[in-house]
Length: 402
Image 1 (tube, rainbow, N blue to C red):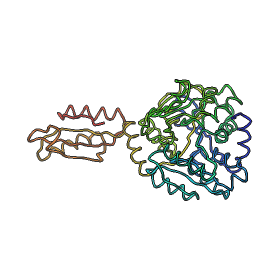
Image 2: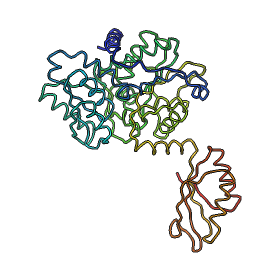
Image 3: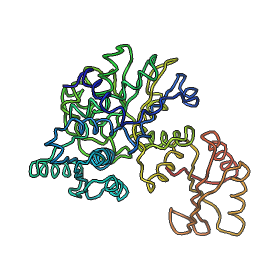
Image 4: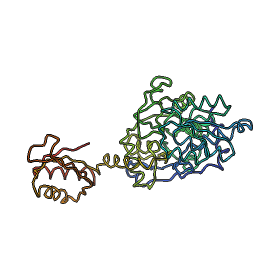
C-alpha cells in the first residue's frame, strides 16, 4: 500500500543517492501568470528525470535472492535509464525491453548506463509483454514504470522535498502519464498539508487518467502520437487511479502546440531544457489553465531527455504558436524587380526573411504571375498584423500558411 509512512521511508532510503533538485522562483513566469511560480527541476537528475526516485526505491527493497536474479523493465525512455543506472551501480543485472522504433540516442543512453537492451515490439505494450515473458522465464523482478507501490512511494519523495523547500506552497502542478508521480506526490503532500491544491496535467492526445475518472475506472484509449511521448500512456494504473481520485483536486489537458510553446519558453526564459512530457505542467501554467491569482505555485519539470533531432522542430512549432515565425503565400507579377519590391515592404517592418520558395506552375498561378512562399521571423502577433496590413495596402494578394 502507498501511504505517507511508505513515502517517508522511501525518501529516507533513497535520499543519499538522489539529487535534491532546485525548487526556485521564476520571475518571468510569475509576471506572466500573476502568481509566484516555483519550478521543481527534476530534469537535473543524473539520468535526466524524476524516474530515478521510484526505480531506486524498488531496487533497494529487493531481497538478496532477487538481486542475484536481476531486474527487467519495459520503457522507451526515462524509466529504462533510471533502472539501468541504479541497478548496474549496485551490481544488479538489468534487462530493458524497448520498442523497435526507439530512437537510437535513447537505446545508446540505456546501454551506456550498463543495461542489456532488447529491442522487441512495435510499441510499449508489445515491449512490456516481452519483458513480462522474460521475467517469468528468467525469474527476474519486473520494475513497472508507474503501477507499483514501491515505485509510487519513491516518486512521492519529490512531494516531501517540495514541502521542505517551500513550506508555504499553495498549489502544485504535476505531469500525469500513468499516474505514478502524481499519486505519490499528492499522497505525501495532502497527508502533510491538506490545504495544498494538487493539479495534474495530461496531454490532450492521451488523457488516460482523466478518462479513468470520468468512467469510474481505468479504460484503454487508442494510441496517438504526441511530442509528450513520455506520458503517452493509454491506460491509467490500477494502483495509481484510486490514489489520484483520493488526493488530486483536478486534471487539465494541454495540446502539442501548447507544449511546444512551453519548451521554447523554458529554454529561452529559464535556460532550462526539457522534453515534451517534462513541459506539460509549465504549458498549463503558461496557458492560464491553472485558475489562481496571487498564489505560490510549484510547477514540476519532470524530465529533460529530448532528442536533439526533434528539438529544432519543437522550437519551430513553439515559435509559430508564439507568433514569432510566419509563413505567407504571396502572389506577385513574374517580372524583374517584383521580388525586390516585395522584400522592401517586408524590410521596412524589420522582419527577417529566413526561407523562400518560388513557383510559377502551381497554386492556380496565372500566366505571367508567380507565387512565393516566404517564412519570416517576427516579433509577435502585432508585428504580423502590421506586415499583412502593409502587404494589403501595397496590393499583394496573400494568405497565411499554417
